[in-house]
Image (cartoon, rainbow over all chains, first blue to last red):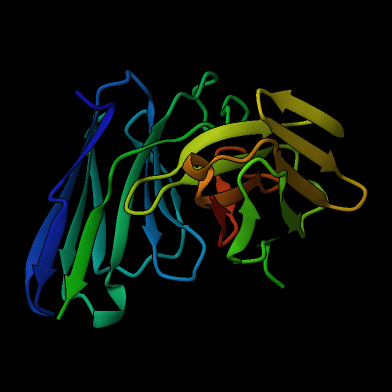
Length: 120
Length: 112
């Protein structure tokens, strides 16, 4: 069983659809992240959750809506997306030893295999 | 100005040679620096971290940090074809210790 599991691995959706990406981590970590990876662009941090609380929203459009019901699960709800939102969406987890998302981060992110999203 | 800059490559080196990957960053207050490796079609994985000026060695990998020049590098000795991947430089930005800012990555090709 891999440490961070993402489903679905591939998703094609129209601009009017609503879909969700799911991420589950089996590492006992307390922080989870959504990153967007587009061709020739740096990995973009979208959201950070620490102990289920959102600690970072990196100016992400409201058509992306995260949900973190517990420390092991993270969702990204998608609605009315645009073609430029097509990308690889990576979920990651980490252990924050201080528990405040500030000083206890080791820098080691454990990534899932990603969900390749295509918006038509 | 980009926060973390890397040459996108590809950087081509023959098998057995030293590969040198470079990264510059804009935030003088950055404290933590990381190298991630990403194979084609796979997710990034951490291979090196460095926090203080100087060199840090781990097997065939050496990370070098120069905070005065805002420069961090990764050397791979005795390069192998299995080292062919994209190498991502990541930096923590001041005030956001749990947030990594990534460069675009350098694609390394190790040729036979």
